[in-house]
Image 1 (cartoon, helix red, strand yellow):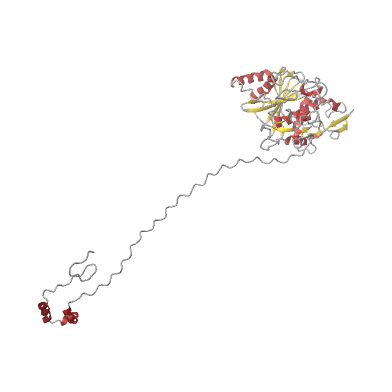
Image 2 (cartoon, rainbow, N blue to C red):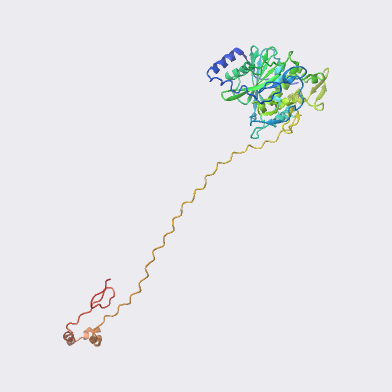
Length: 451
C-alpha cells in the first residue's frame, strides 16, 4: 500500500526553550491578555464533561464522565446555530506537534495520510471528500459554509515532561506560536499529540479529568496578538487506553483496516476533531441543547452493516467504510447531518454554493435639492400714454383780405409795380405781420400757448 511521505524534516525542540520564549513574551503584555479566550463556558447544559470545553469521551465499557457508555446516535436532539458564531470557511492548514518520545512512525504517517486525503478529489476512488461534505453543510450568519480545503502544515518534535492541567497543555502550543515555529494564523489548527509515556490531565487548570478515564481528545483556542489560535490535544493510546481506539464492538468481530486499533482510532479522532473545530471552534456556534457538537452526536457510530465493507484479511475479516488516496482504507465515524437534523451520515454530495452574502444597502441618496426659485415674472411695462392725435397740417399763412386780390401778383413778383408797393405802405402802414406759434404753426397774434 503506497503512502505519501513528508518532504520536510520535523524540527526538534525542548519544552524549556518554548516556555522561556513564552514567558518572555508574556512579560511585555498587559496582565490577562495572553489567556484571553482560552476558556469560555459554552452553555448551561452539560453532558457530564467539562462545561465550555468539547472533548471526545471514551468509548466502550467502563470509564467515567460522559463517555462511560456508547452514545446513542443523535442523543440530545437537533443541533442549532447559536450566537451568530463563527466557523472556519477558508482553507485550513493542519500542524502537528509530536510531544514526547515513543510516537510510532506508523501513527504519524496514518495521520498525515488522512489529512492529505480529506479534501483531495484527484483520486475518484477517494471517498473521504464525501464524508467531509457533511461538514460543509454548516454555515455562518451570512450563509458561508465550511468550504475550505484541508492541507498539511508544519511539524515539530518536542520533548518534555507531563502536562498537568489545561494551562500546561496550552502553553506548549502558545510557545510554538510566539517563537514563530507555528504560524500566527486564524486559519490553522495545531494538533498537539502526546506520547503514551506523557501524562496529561485537565481540560482546564482547575479540572481533575484524566485522559482515557474521562476523554480521548479535546479542542479549544486562545487569543494571541488579536488572533484566535485553534488547537487540539490528542493522546497516543498505545498500550494504555484501548477505549480511545476503535470501539470493541467493531474489532471484537472484524479486523480494523490498518491492523492496529490504535492507528485507526487516532485517524478517527482526527476526523472527529477536524469536524467540530472547523464548525464550532469557539465552542458555542453549532450545538444541541446539551452542548453536544455535530460529530459528538455520532460517537461510536460507524454505519450499519450495509455501510461496512468487509473483506478477507490475513487471518480475519477486515472492516472499513472510507477509502483515501492510493487505496488506503479507514474506519471513520459518522457526522451529524445538518440538512435533516435527525441522523448521522457517512457521506453526502457536495452542497450547492450558498447564496452570496447580501450586499449592504446602498447609502441613501441625498434628497434632491429644490430647484432654484424662478425669477419673478417681469413686471408689465407701464402703460404707454395714448398716442396724441396727429397734429393737423399747418394752415397756410392767412393774408389780409384786401391783399387776396393781389395774390397772383404776389406769386409773380417780377410783375409787381412800384406803385403797388407804395399803395400797400400808404393804406396799411400799421398792419402787423402775424407771428406763427412754434408748436402749432398757427397764427398767434396775441401770445403762443406754452409748449
